[in-house]
Image: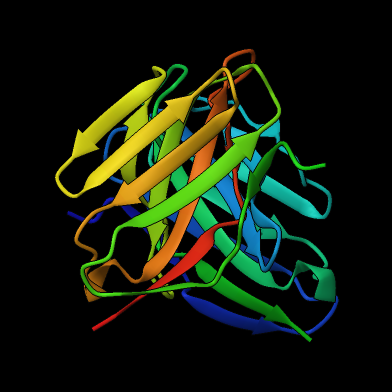
Length: 113
Length: 112
């Protein structure tokens, strides 16, 4: 069972470079999410997509853009990477509706020099 | 003040010990509570999911919720070295979208 698949697993960028993180799920979930995880801060929501064709900002959206390409895929783009965006990025998905547990991928470790 | 507070640990226990992990929260709108387990260099994995105040048991794991005190716990009985991981509590706000609010996680090591 693939579940939620994220690519790439690791990436090193220079300040100012752009990058797209890819996420795909095979669980037929309508909702998808992007989080970042930093030491001492826990997981923080960047953007989410409640259904295909919709996206909304989370707690920390600045510096990021997202695209819900289709029901399976939800990408996160850094247009001009900054060192403060060095983090581990997780994608998650869930069924539609409130109170649905989210299922996570294994993350992309991104370092910006 | 964060909406969800969790002691980061680290916590080290001998194999076979009972482990207690805890979170407190301040938002009364949190109604659904989850525990995730995260192994090193992996994504969070859903462990327990509960709504009501009281206890929910699943094998060696028991989730406890006290909404009046805004306090949740995860107990692990007969802890095993394979339980060594970071444990994250998470909560859903009933008033908005299906967004999770996470604690910072407690790192647990079970020593053989």
